[in-house]
Amino acid sequence: MYYGYGIDITYVFVIIGMLITLIASWRMKATFKKYERVPSVSNLTGREVAERILRANGIYDVSIRPIAGRLTDHYDPRDKTVSLSEAIYGSTSVAAIAVAAHECGHAIQDNVGYVPLNLRSAFVPVANWGSKLAWPMIVIGLILGYGNMSNLLIQIGIVMYMMAVAFQIITLPVEFDASRRAMVELKSNNILPSGEDSSARKVLFAAAMTYVAAAAAGVLQMIRLFLLFNGRGGRRRG
Image (cartoon, rainbow, N blue to C red):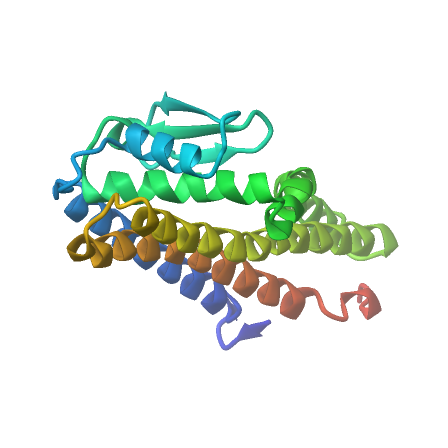
């Protein structure tokens, strides 16, 4: 869709998506940086917090390991491992405790058979293929010009992109629920005093917003693709 001087006005969706993502990322980094400087009264490290929460839930088959990088923390249900980044594993900050508890929230989800987590795990291969092949298929289709094969490749590319976006949307309830479980565990196990609750919530909320932003950007790009290629199959070369 073009306007005026051949400008593709659908780029506004890309720009909005980029701005949302950048703002969410900036906020997450700023919030984490602020609270990684605030030591928790409990004086527990991220590793110790993870151990306490897992044991309190009767989970003994999940290992905790340090991992390189910053904000690379994650839980892998395939090998049942909570991986904590260097800034979390040995730190006693409020940020470290909140993040460690969040990753344990995923381990608890796995332990109780939380359906959205299982759905996301099953969707991972599909989403990976979708994110890798969507744009190559669309580009090849455009290179071929107009015709049945061109239109088919573009439509396949769009469907693959939709799969990647669907994965991002499925991720949202998983992440929000893990944060909810984290706060419950931090309170029930007396890890954070009441005065530190709000700080931990801010860290978890900022992290969750990065997933919301990524999903929103994906949806906006998907809308752009529909606007660009809707009805393309009916066109023919002049």
